[in-house]
Image 1 (cartoon, rainbow, N blue to C red):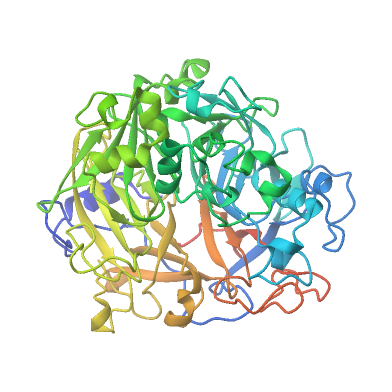
Image 2: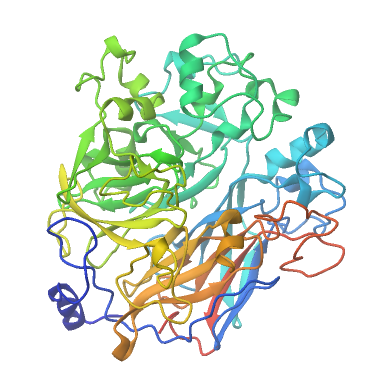
Length: 619
């Protein structure tokens, strides 16, 4: 861990690295704690790879039983009841909660994991990825609905390895699990359906991607690409416009779901789609507690829900809307967090103000309130109340002139200095005419990272609730040896350090930034697999980007999460053998990671990574 002297030195060096873009910000400076691992070079194959001196334990795989009494996983006999008691598919965001509550235990905890979506052609033999509809019967659809959602898993570190504890804390939430709706939009007429005429209770969590953790020990689960669940069209003109703004309708994604569940048919339930695209709060320490959709945080394709405290104790949640030309949002609670009143904190995220970011070329940023009656957000523009604004958050942000970004995904705050980092994955639809200071590249194939400074940052008393921040471009991704790509980094990228398509990120206990990538099919252009990189110091070389982990072919890397002591890194490997591999499937996958069993398909999995000598990751 850095000393106080290290931290003061970290804050005092402002001119050592260039700041990209306009603004008055101090230049970015990595944590003084050095990165000492031997970096990996770019490549792609069927396996995962780590630096020498590290090992990865496959902790949880799709289909692993969580409750101890079920038969072992069999890919040839999938059934919905067993899947609902097993680890889900396509693991994404990970959150580690020490046990007992309030402790800093790094050897006993609860692991919370999102399960975003399914790949049927890798779950069942004989399926054509491009023509699934006719093969997806009621049984397979029920398995899919049971395979997405969220898992809570108790784990313990015993005899040099992590073990799953089949105890009372283990829990699966699926697309069918009951979820309460709370906050300003709860009970709104546009959230009422024939199954739920109150508008306060919904079936399931759809397409959870990123997330966050609250100071009071709950997990925030961010629903992202919910639009894929819904098919058909509605005759309600108002809702048809609303659906179009979110890409809902037609035959996108999983049209067979509507064949067996009328809630996913827009011509049957016009309001059902409005009940997804929220942030869900869950108490992992209370297995019987109902999860809650927090409507005060707005409805869009949430990639993250980074939760921090403002200088005055109010709670702040940052979230990106993961689609090209969408926005960055911030919620600020009305009341303050009270460490001595845990029960009262549970309502903090139901009452506050949602705002959207407007970036200016001079390096300033303003948070514009999404408040009923503010500017164009009135009944004259179709917003009769605050509930309408929260249901149609994207359209409200359009009217406020927010800055359209290049797929804002994860947003994380450095716990050492309060600086906020926003991952922008890519946007090939950006043109020279639509480029701006915050999105400076046309045809942005490789993505970039923005750095936001609230007042007081970098520092120890940071006002995350302020109306104005400063900002700069932290890095433009791509290969700096190819001038046409326009890549620029605050540090060296020699030896495999350059990267493309930043997605998830995390800070370790020493304040070092770790960046996970999601290239999709773009790995065929870069020539290497997705992975995990770290930004830090490396002796005489100064600031560096170093590649730490390489995923198997066709996989993306998600949810980096450290134990409090920094000695274990949990990492999600999602959809191995899928991205950029349209001709492969269950019978002939490009990889059978992680089992490499000829009788098993590739399986998304969570890894527990440790050093052979038990030291801190990265040191």
